[in-house]
Image (tube, rainbow, N blue to C red; front, side, top):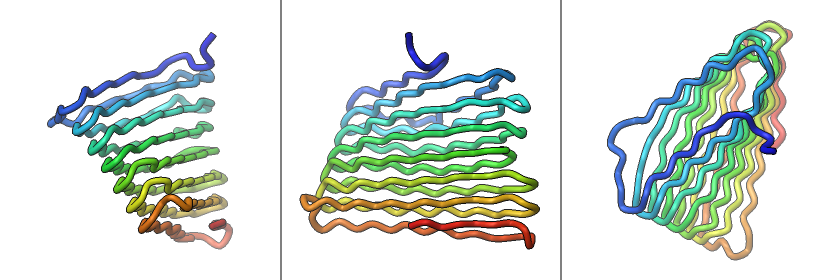
Length: 208
């Protein structure tokens, strides 16, 4: 009775270092698909991966990725989506323990409707987050990017930047939310959204 049809589960035990970059290629059909991925990185471990998504034309789908980072763990990953005129929702949820680091790079193009939602819970002390997003829009494409960062641990650091380039009648909405809770002492957070409008009808809205 799962809501999703396909997905990945990757588990890296504690005290392990994955030297090679894992590569995942997803070719979606022309029907609606919901995908669920789970990555668990154990304490004192590190890994990196690249995921490339290439759906059929007019595809409708959703990807939901859960990342769980153990103490003093490191994760570096790149997400690339070539939409081919599809409608796509990408949701990323990260839970970070003491001393962990999440470094995520995101690139997307050719989506009629694209939604990117990133939720990062920095529950551990001295955890750090780096997030970089890049979007290219054209024709009547619409992109909605929402970044939610929650600082719970002390001395935690986050650095997020989303950049879009738009032409024709394309539009982008960038929403950034950072919450630093009272128990998060000596923490720092940064969020920026940059837009390059390449035609008079292109439009970008920033909602910090």
